[in-house]
Amino acid sequence: MKKRRVYLDHNATTPLHPAVQKTMKQAMKLFGNPSSLHSYGRAARQAVESAREQVASFLHAVPDEIIFVGSGSEANNTVLSIISCPSQQCACDRKERNQIITTRIEHPCILEMSQCLKDRGVDVSYLDVDAYGRIDIEQLKRILSPRTGIVSVMMANNEIGTVQDIQAIAGIVHDRGALFHTDAVQAVGKMPVDVQALGIDFLTLSAHKMYGPKGVGALYTRKGIPFCPFIRGGHQEKGRRAGTENTLGIIGLGKAVSLRHDEMAGESVRLLMLKAKLKEGIIQKIPDIRFNGHPEFCLAGTLNVSFDGAEGEAILLYLDLEGVAVSTGSACASGSLDPSHVLLATGLPAEKAHGSIRMSLGRDTTEEDIDYVLKVLSGVIDKVRMMSTDYSRYQNTTGFARE
Amino acid sequence: MNTSPEWVYTEKVKDHFMHPRNVLADEAQFQADGRGVVGNIKCGDQMILVIKVDKQKNIITDCQWKTYGCASAIASTSILSELVKGMTLEKAFHLSPKDIARQLGGLPEHKIHCSVLGDKALREAINDYYRRNGMENKIQKEEARLICQCMNVTDHEIEHAVLEGARTYIELQERTKLGTVCGQCKDKATALLHEYIRKHFETK
Image (tube, rainbow over all chains, first blue to last red; front, side):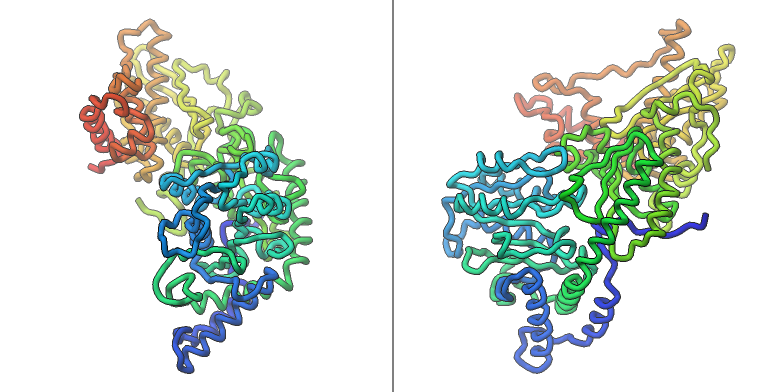
């Protein structure tokens, strides 16, 4: 069987869309500083504002509500800092609201920033999730208080793909007078997002998750609500985010978003079909497995599976040697010694978390790719289980003939 | 340590990962003279190491293993199983994690604990052999010493914390809670912290 290179790690990052690459190559000539008044500056300014309109329109927002930033992490840090700015000069007039609520399955940038806020005296509460990764709305209702400033719940989880009922959550949050933020980095470009209809106050998105370039993202901030700049300095982004604009990246983001507008719906249908084939194939070929994440409310291309008795990094590297790129919830591969906090939050025992693999399909994934993965996966799992201390089915087999 | 787009660890680790030697297929058939089990799948690393011993000469004649763990863990037990064949029990017992890591061409810092676990599995297997053959006097047990009386923290736990990444006294405290009551153990704990860092992470 001829080796094939298959990239199944789209939730980690995506390749540039060919049209984005072309647009960016041309845009490299546009070197002016968008803040300059002369023709060089004006040309760059026009391109930046055009991209801003693309992003705003994609989210059903207005251009004024879009701030370009350097990453999803920066956007998330910016939103959470709003609540802890001690400056008297700051536009934030919600100082009596000293509590934030978030979830146990957020991306580390939200969790680390929350911990930092806790150290600064902010009251931080974490919502639990069920076995599928969905938050407990009743718990949210119980924890919400007159002191709640911001509630932050990610729209779609990067590891297990679970999608939250954002509209319901935002409604409850607003009823209690608090603001609602969603880290939508994994969702924007994969499903329609209408900030008006969903009732969102702040939203984070990142270009490199939707076939755009790395190093650029956007923060949507509803008109009229308090904002506190995270990066201070020049007057870029209407004084909300200093630093000369990453024109090239922003143009790439704008183009990526306009392509998503055209390709998103059809791609979702296709990915659901490919994922179903992958899932079915795994069920048929490999015993003692468990799928993580919600079976229905889930990103179309994300499949997270735990293999009993097999360790994640070993699976990942054997697959890598076969040309297949995936990600794992095992501690070993992350450089830390704790397994995925997301899987643990769903109640999955640590040993199963160590044995889990995330496969995230994308626009370039074909049916042949899925067939190939299914061919190599069972051999890999077999090999790892044969060597494992924890897989009893192979305790008494004789011989070890695998290559 | 050579890392490149071609592979994430050394060529030696890759070789043992792709072609593991001496995997224990049938424990009943192997009929071990000594068996060591270390680690915990909850932590993501577990090893079973079994040996056959020539009782006249006290030499290891065969060694096989099973490992639940990452590429570094698999490579550690694989290379260890090759190293010990033909060694006396004494010599095998005195192999160190550094020997394993060196044979593998080096391991990244966060993977050193794999070589430590492999070394421990071998010692457990050897001690098990001594126990089975009425040679308890030969057992070299490493008793844990209590360092922090207030919070009941031993030197083994400090070593474990260092293997997990603790490099300063504050980090040590975060992981073990030692020294957070009367504080008298601080000097001793700090000395051990540096000793373990030297032992596991300094290159000779």
